[in-house]
Image 1 (spheres, rainbow, N blue to C red):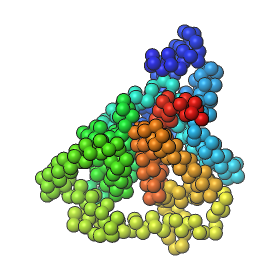
Image 2 (cartoon, rainbow, N blue to C red):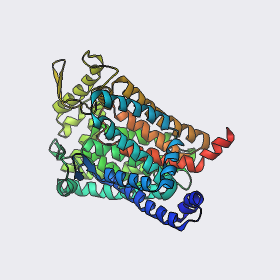
Image 3 (tube, rainbow, N blue to C red):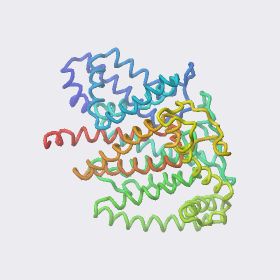
Image 4 (cartoon, rainbow, N blue to C red):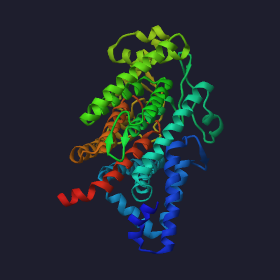
Length: 448
């Protein structure tokens, strides 16, 4: 905090003690905000005509702070304009605004606006108050807590969070697959928890001091997160985790790559040994079922049936998802104007009842038409290109691992809707933006 004050607020406000005191209050608010945004489930909050989750309550408090403190508010607005991705988010916001007006649906704008304003608040908090190093350290601690919680949840066979913290109307329910409980942590679905774990794996590989990415920077944490991924019972996130780790190894520095390959061999030997010990137990069978389900999905085999998988259900799930992109061809959807955020589900389509749109890009088309799909797609692409360019130009490992994680996350959304997980991607992007602004922005301006 002292660093942040001397670096930013002391410069912005001079040595005004009242303003410095206000800055300390803002530091506390932003710190709580970051922790809450990571940890509190979407079904916890207050319902007052609208679901005010923990994140949204803090959104309102921090916005009120900025309204009452004009100096800080103006500084926050200027910080929004300095970000590379702002023009693309502005374009997406424009699409949401005209869809809201034409579809007369406030949620169409309001829900996405709060997600986007959360991104800017998290960036501001990390850049000017908390610091990138501390944000990474806190996230690593959160990853440990949530990883241990996932093990406890699996052992208990129910979610303590869902049981004791559900204060908002929600469709969240306990899910079993092939007789095994699927953990979902602080999320509303086990697949959503898998997407969160993909982002936490990326952060677990960050070395702030050396600005490097290293798969085994925190090997025990990596192992814990992978165990949680298996326990979600979700094929997609598990397969994408393997792809993410492969890219992290491939794009690491050569000396790190050699060291990683050695530890990876040791890691695989330990995992295989543990699995051989557990193979006759329900846990061992479940782990093998998840692993072979990924293989079956990629190569079209049927190994998972040997470990208790319900292949009929898995095949139906895959067939259902393959059917969804055909929605782009229907005539009853206006391609330039979606149905809005509250698009009516379920609906009939080619003699198939669509009960949920398990494809974020199809869902975006249904909600916002091609303009919404293209504008958010541009934002995603630039959210990958900017970190990748920084990684190559400045040899920044943190930027590279962010680019990898957002790429993997964006691809995974082809098979699932966002499931209230975009906030995790926004936190990851905010860490990159704060790191870039702190370390490289001035240097790039001078070079240009």
